[in-house]
Image (spheres, rainbow, N blue to C red):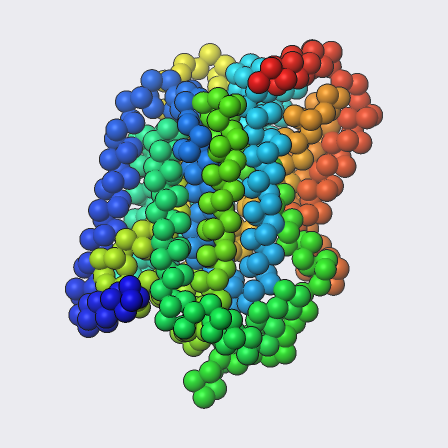
Length: 536
């Protein structure tokens, strides 16, 4: 069996720790050099203009658009955060999150992609999300643009921090080195690469990294399931843990100071907790986040042609389902096969690393673990690029220095990129950070701030500038209010902040728009958009 070959090779290689680390490191270095090579290749083209640097000149093909969107969206959360949640709490939380994300992915490509691609061109050829929002409502003074840019800066800084946490955990776990040092080195690598190649290099490398991620997930899942005697055997053993394999229940690890207790070499669990219908709806609301994700929406804007979107939707949806299902079951199988190896919620996020190192020889383990590096780089470069472009293109050029040249805009973008990296690195220095929690907050922020507005902007003719402003402020503000003030109350209020914040933002847009008069120029532009959309 293929599994037996891998296992025997892995056991022999693991006998020499230094050699094991050397082989794993060699594979990761080769992978990182390949990524840098892509950046160098596209550097000259990226520096031709800000449009080339920020959206690749609208030249992305269907496969690159689809897979780069998914890779930049999922981040290291897919290979560490989601399996860690399944390992720690069981099926329900991870499963319903994955279902929400899969549905959200499909619907976003189905109902938003083509509309936004067409409208971004009609709205003064917009190349950033804040720019699109401002041009969509024909702003004379860029208030919407400025507020959108600030929200992007805040939430992408948090997002970038989650990526640096992933890098720190990966390398400190693999090589027993300082977590803080690994965070800093990882941040330097990511910012150098993003600095060099811009959106096109980022998208092409993300395409490659999406392939690396899906292969890594499937290989890792196959190994741990084979070792456990097949899916049936894994499921039978997982059912022995109270609430662990239930759709409407949740496992309750018994902890002391955050560390799960172990008795007779077995982890201790309390009675299964309840996973209510309200909690399921709340968790499914993860899917709403897609409508406001700038890194995904920019792929819609940058795709070569609206005729490519149908293929992109299919590719993205299939990739998403396979990746999410593999990720969740890696966590389930990992708990069965390695029940006492990871005894805190933070440590549980290392289950993918543990499985790869246990079953594979060093070099192959390094190639599989490159999936985590791929997920992290593909996301963090997107976050840094979009956040820096929001400040440089939308704040610097349109607010502070309207006569700024293209070269000046790109220079400011890179300065801002460095500043964001420094702040995100500082946030990531806490070694006990839980990737899933960091990502969930930033995801809610983008989903509630931009999701309702993007949907209404492409579907509704009579949404006003005042309604758009109210929607962004209510959505973005409520994420903080619900997370910090309302959710701690508990009970029915202890639900994921994205759902209520998204709903309140939507209500604010509709109500304020009904109370204010639409601009005739905005209505005329919307009619042109409808005409162009019907032609495609």
